[in-house]
Image (cartoon, rainbow, N blue to C red; front, side, top):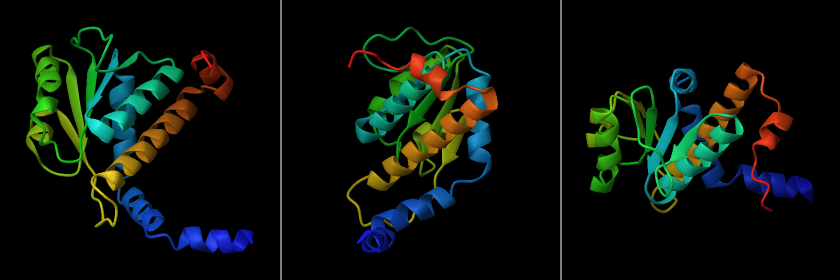
Length: 178
């Protein structure tokens, strides 16, 4: 029975899409983002819709790594020089993405965009990581969001290993409200 399930999973077009998208991420992207994070005082994340959810999840994991990070919403300090703003957007088309980027630029913070195209946001940010995605059978930006979440988890794991942070240490920074 288990082999039958394994075969069905491996034949899934969605799993294949995700695999192709992950393999297409340039090797240097992980190092680039880790270096940007390490060389920043604080990390701010921004995105809309499901892309914003992936950004929020990454901000949480950065907190688990004892990094000062924020998703732009609710309680959030002002951005300043030495900070890093990471914007997550598949298309970069929404005008609602601009105000935080403009504020970061005005404050002389570093800006980095994770996207799939050369767009207004990617052009005004200091750096852009452009993900090349295959055609998808999924609705909307699902493949982008799945790829970004896995990419962010790879960043977390590589950073954790590089800095010698144990799971136990991360757990101490995990919410204990439940």
